[in-house]
Length: 141
Image (tube, rainbow, N blue to C red; front, side):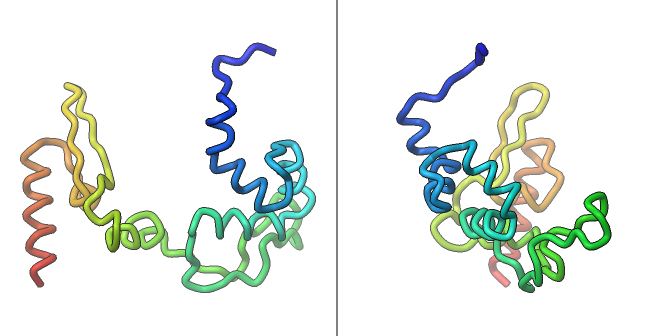
């Protein structure tokens, strides 16, 4: 099979999936990792959640509930997840607080990047300035 791109050994070594495979005892073997995900989801998925740093506001009761049939499977039954917290708010505190949180590329290829842009519909430089002003005013409260 011909691939459009093949990672270098260094890229493979630094890949997140390699770290996960090793943590699960698959020693960097993608096929073993895939097999584990299918055969033992109750082991695989909690490890993925931990590796990604996803925080549930309410813990799940079971990883996978297929009691109503595979077509109605429920993942992380009983768990509650705050998507805004996991994707944005927890990163807005600490070392990454001033890092780019969202990047908008307009059709004219103008690049706007600012953490404040995440909160508003930012389409122009003026919108970005408005977002910064709102974020600054919010921070002063």
